[in-house]
Image (tube, rainbow, N blue to C red; front, top):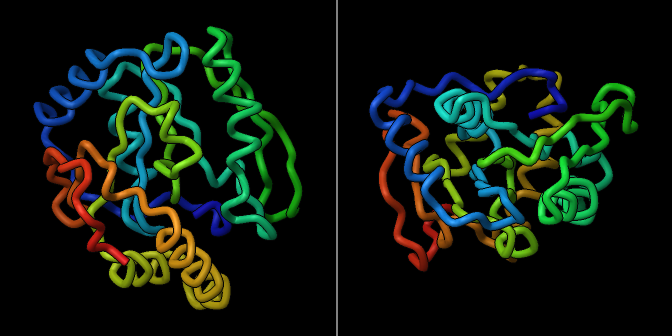
Length: 210
C-alpha cells in the first residue's frame, strides 16, 4: 500500500508464455474507453496487485499503470472514483492523454502529477479497481485470488508493527467496500496470489472472498 511507501509483497512469477498470452488477449479486446482497453487489477490489499500489474505492463510493452493508492487519501480511502473519472477516464474516452494528481502519504496531501498516455491498453490497479463506478469503462477485470486474512498477514509482515493500527482501520474499510460493491464476481481473469497462476474467471460467480 502507498502508506508504507513499498511495493506489494513478493508474488511468484507467472510463466512468460502465460503473461504473453494474457497480454495478447487483452490487446485483442474491443476498446472500452475511447481508443483504450482499460483493464482493472483488483484484489485485497496485500494480494500482489502492484507486482502483477507491473509484470503485465511489461508484457504489454510498457503499458501505463494507474495506481489507485495515488488517488486515495487517508481520509477517503475509497472516495477516489470522481478523481479517476475526471482526470483519467474522461480524457482517455475523448482520445486524449490523462494526468492525475498524486497523493503523498507522508505529507498527507496531493503533490505532483502522473501522466496517463492514451495507450492501446491502460492498467488500473488497486483495491476497488473493478468497482461499480468504473466497470462501464473497463474491458476486463483481473482479480488476485488471495483471501482477505492471508493478504492482510502478508501486508502486515511487509510493513511492520508501526503500521498495525493503519492496517486495522484499512481492513474495516476494505471489508465494508467489498461487501457493498464486490469486484470478484465480475472478473474475467483470476491470478492466484500464492502461485501466480493465471486462470480464466467466471463472470457472475458469487464472491467467496470476504
